Length: 131
Image (tube, rainbow, N blue to C red; front, side):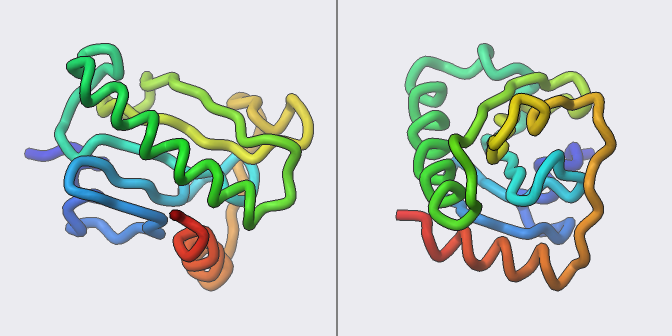
């Protein structure tokens, strides 16, 4: 059975999609650290980011860069931080987190719960800014 991120990328599980192409998918984290926290994944189930071949590894970062620039356009922040942890879900993923303080990327703090309508609007705004 496919993992949760593969099922999200395929549309089997609904998500707040930001961007996708033939190999990658970006969507809002449903338990964000801060508003705009986004996950970037390969559609292919790969457990560890550094198990990707060199071309895919380069390409996921280019895809993530487009998404990060869109996040920064929509969410007031100093920078968009990056974290690659990968212990909670066995599918390679990059966290893109809008930062105004170092605590914004502290994974041990309580996660936010945003209303579905706010998440939907936020996803649409960021998606519209992806170039």
